[in-house]
Length: 391
Ligand code: HEM
Image 1 (cartoon, rainbow, N blue to C red):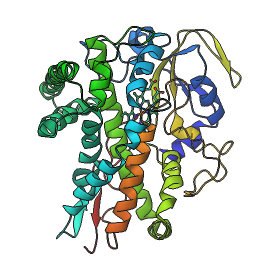
Image 2: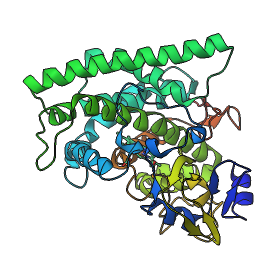
Image 3: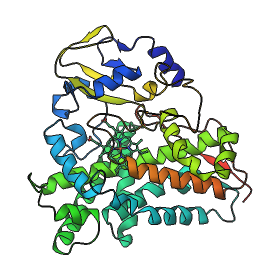
Image 4: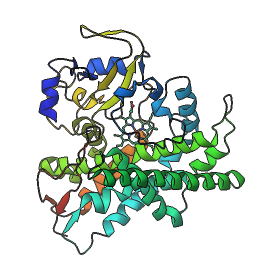
């Protein structure tokens, strides 16, 4: 998509016939993502502007990613209090040991093989296991939880096949949503009665301090958001990361010699091959003048952060992968009030995974380049990534 983005950036704000306004340059995206006149609220979206299927459970209230202040801020604060920075990054950093244990355990299973599919054998099972530990899903329930998470996550793929098959696809997702909601309700109730040291307990026992605590439907909706927002994105970051390293053998060698390089390297990956390419479905609440164009009130906006990340007005040599690139304020985790709350966790996961994969795989090689990609305009990442190695 990157040559296409370069073409798009020649006109920072374009409109495709009667469709949404597409914004592709760094500073314009930055400005709009910090503009209170740009709404993420699903209720402001004109019905004809709804392009992506709703991946959340339609029987639950919208989660805070699809809300504006003050509703967004209240729910985000309540989650932050139980999750992470700036108040309590300890919950995430406390998972460091477990994260490396999960990484080593998955790589141990490669023993005796000379080829893996990185997606199926590593990237896919890894983040959902971490989210289970973060939330406090008991290990004996993890397999069931993975099943629902996988099914719910398929909602981001456009359905394929006959109308009957497409209907079956949506039915399966709905069913998984209901099972997930039932399961989480049970767990919340258990933890309310007997809290443990996990995030669900923190949420279930939170009285809300100076604001009203979350209702049960709000908890279900926002916990599902964490699951959806933190799953495929992390899968793709790790897979895009190995692919990029295998295409840059000198960097791979450098990383093997200096594992600390993984920290800036993951930032450069988030700029160079970001899992989230497009932020669709925002709405203007007023006329907004930007880059010489007036976007009228009520228009649908699509921002292309992956294009902003390659904007030469912001990043020198944007199409080069520079693992220790300085001043790397990329849009990999968005920016503004909806910036990713999972970024500390996602960073830890990607750093642990890439450093250990590079350390343990002997002479890893791509089997096909490019690998098969999933068909998705929002999320970019290979569907499979076969890698051969010497053992
Ligand atoms: C928001 C990317 C991992 C939870 C976002 C946004 C991006 C993003 C671009 C902004 C969305 C917008 O502006 O509408 C990523 C990437 C990840 C990742 C690339 C992994 C590599 C995670 C994880 C979690 C998470 C692990 C949770 C455990 C969220 C939530 C929001 C969000 C809750 C909404 C924040 C808000 O609306 O205030 N993420 N994310 N993400 N992310 Fe992530």
